[in-house]
Image (cartoon, rainbow over all chains, first blue to last red):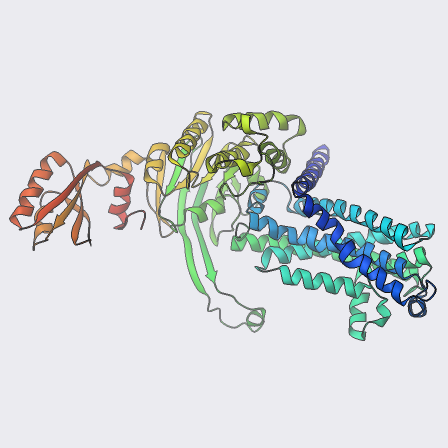
Length: 281
Length: 329
């Protein structure tokens, strides 16, 4: 038992080392830090908030109020973006980072160490989360200071939903990482699936406006429920489904996606060993 | 470490999921990279795999390093099966496989080593001491806090070796450790490899430099087309060609019979025409006796010897005798 605890401690230390390494490298490219944290805000959040303000009547988005039960377009977008940061961390911060390491020829030496393969995913996850957290804080500050966003304290009730969604998205990160390791040109697939994931989760709009088939996709995504529960508790929006059902769906998706992602990642590792492609770049 | 009937076959081209589901015949081209390799590396020796590019040395090395699954056969590293317990195997070796690019150039040497120390599961209390020790071993202590991007290629290769030494492994796997290095850096690296043996470590290295194999290795496996064609000490391998010296001749205006006349006095290891000259490589017991006879034979055949070079027998000559080709072809 003590051995197992020691092994966990060593893996945890490796996770921290990966995060420290990623952040150290990033700080040596100051503009890249600004780009990674600021780009979603200045390219996406601010223009969207301004667009929302353009269509607001007396500060309320009447159409949104009709479809989603809240007229606070800024709060609606900010809470969607909060989960979009999580999705971006999974797709780019974890999944696509394996491609960058392959291109740099630094993945193979990591693959030659006794560290658990999953630790390499979790380490990247932690560094991506740190960056996302900075981005989220900055985004919230801008939203509150410039766009008057006010969230209800009841939003803390949605924290369990956010955490369950994070577990499920970690499963997705394992799936994306597997694909990135095996596909030669993954950038298109990562970009397209990230965009589809964010759109179908209702980051920018209520999923009720999606065509029928995409609505089905939405209900299969954990992030749909996390965003909705955040909006219900933080803005008083109308829930898509009974919140209890949404929690049940979130728990079920986390219970499916995380083991599934881990199993697929183990399979991808075996495929890499069959093909010998971990060192190819 | 030992390998038994180790084989690796790569498939070229793609087989789609639809083809798999329809169970269509698999028409992909198959390339046998490693073809039944058998070897055993003893503890504390430097064992070399020598062969031209594409011979199967690196593929064998990557199987032993758990990066590649063999198609068939078995390999054990310190008694542990590479297929069944890859993580356990990885705890027991350090490797220099992917060259000097495989470092984080925007980190310092010390930061690189701190990162890999955690991945090698070095306990925190030992990390600092091990980092200082390996930096000292590869003579990089005074540059430890410089970014790797400011290093020369030789320094980066030394840092890659330092990384492999971090867990203080009993076994080192070195794939072409001196390739691309300048002569001084290559010499430094070879000296360091010899020091590793004196520290009791086992070293398995691949090279296509015959001098390197000759100078470093206790035993050498000569590999060609995925097979071991000879395996012994460098001295014993050189003895197999039954010659003490090699004479290289360049002959102009070859007349009929010059080669057959020369072969009466020495063994013709290789002949080729280039630049209007006949280039011959002869294996002989005594160049002192053979060279005058060679001039006589050429004169008698109406040919002129333009250039004579006498060199000692090397592993290159052994490879030539075994395969009919030069190592660099």
